[in-house]
Image (tube, rainbow, N blue to C red; front, side, top):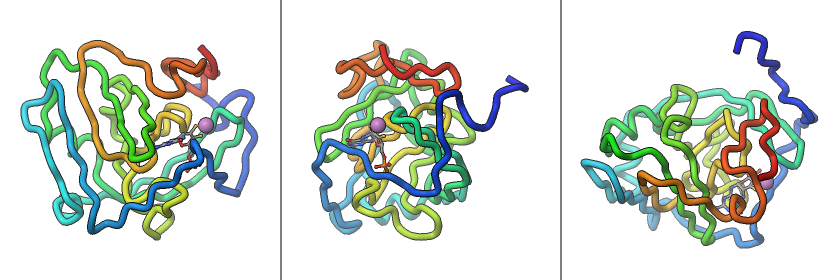
Length: 187
Ligand SMILES: Nc1nc2c(c(=O)[nH]1)N[C@H]1C(S)=C(S)[C@@H](COP(=O)(O)O)O[C@H]1N2
Ligand SMILES: [Mo]
């Protein structure tokens, strides 16, 4: 949409980076980090930290929008592009949804079409530093076009499904899709 404003409706700009989670902040060292995949893909991966780092790296600057009404502009992320990640795991034609599983038991569902975009990254760094434990390091996806609850912290496993399965907040009243410009906050 050409007339899409930078700040989505109902949001307030902040320079801070608030921390929101279920109250468990798993401490995963890069050395113990693994990322695995399952479901409707041709090439499941089981990556350690070195495998992750050996992938082509990108830098990307994005805005982030939290459903609790704060937005933060110009976050610099480094990591693997969603496009590259998908070129490795190769979703089958039937794959329509992704579920992100995290070390704290959190899950969230994202349409494959939302993840499969140039502005999406599996990030390990924020503003030039490794993503802190509080913000979901070693690795979290960043999907700027959806509210930040869709960007799972401490991600460990990604599965590809034909049918949608609502995640932690989606079954507790958050909107299934979460587009900030449509104010898709609650179900
Ligand atoms: N693993 C995990 N990821 C999560 C959450 C969580 O509780 N656990 N909370 C989500 C919510 S509701 C928000 S608003 C953002 C907050 O990210 P931040 O703490 O880096 O600001 O993380 C999202 N990702
Ligand atoms: Mo949130």
